[in-house]
Image (tube, one colour):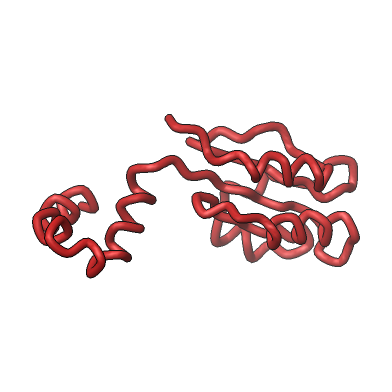
Amino acid sequence: MADRLLLALSSEVIRYPAGYAQLLQAAAWLLEPSREIVIAGTPGTSAFKAMRAVVNDSYAPKSVFILHPTDDARIVKLAPYVEWMLPVNGQAAAYICQDFTCQKPLTDPQELKKQLAVPPKIR
């Protein structure tokens, strides 16, 4: 459906691209690689706060971030695939996923920062 919409509007977009900024952004999400980052842990802990700070300070426009407080089941109802993403040895963990595949979880905020500095891989 998205492909058909882009095709139907393509001649208009070519004539006046500035008028279709949101449509072009949607096309970028459709055509370019993206990734999901899930931070799992207990929100009040220093480890969780450190991971969240890295996410908040990162510029990662092709990434979707999900905070998974493991003491609250509501996020699992919204995004069931995060249920298995848990802290590692009691430490908050970051899961970086692309194309339905996740890397091994990260517990070091500096390593997460390094990983987020690299854009998603082209398929």
